[in-house]
Length: 214
Image 1 (cartoon, one colour):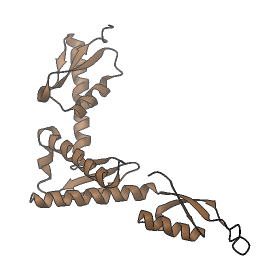
Image 2 (cartoon, rainbow, N blue to C red):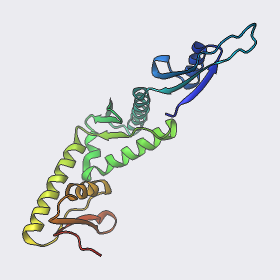
Image 3 (spheres, rainbow, N blue to C red):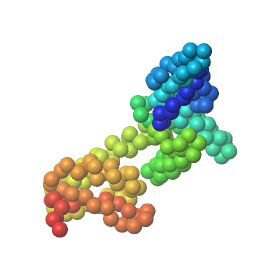
Image 4 (cartoon, rainbow, N blue to C red):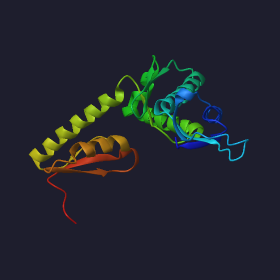
């Protein structure tokens, strides 16, 4: 959240105005007093108090988490899905874990539905609160486990490509998964990677040797 400046007859009144406008409590704000203000002599030369405020990061994260959970609960209720979203505040993002007997629906096909749900949740929250900290939607550590498997797959393919001196094609993946593979091998000098295919058949190919210079 960007900083905002408020003025009033006193610092306390300026803080009250900031809380009214921003819809928060004083403890939710980081406050810098720019001018304490003065009443002047018989009101002549009076100066207003001026403060600069911004919402504390943890407050912003909490608001985004609450909004995301509210949206997801309404979505699952309308679809009669037995899923309960649980929010957790991290340092600079919000993590929401989906729990319940229907949560596994979002991990099928490599988590494509989970990616779509995360994208939609971020869009809905941004429309209400503006662009801010990312909201990560997960199902019982699915993302971390999936990333670990992709990195393992990438390294095994790299070793095979180096050993056989032939390119190795990996299964179709979404853009985020392909990026994980590319990053996993980007520092290796004995292989290089490229994306190939179209649409749902888009995948990564691991080639032996460094990339050819154009």
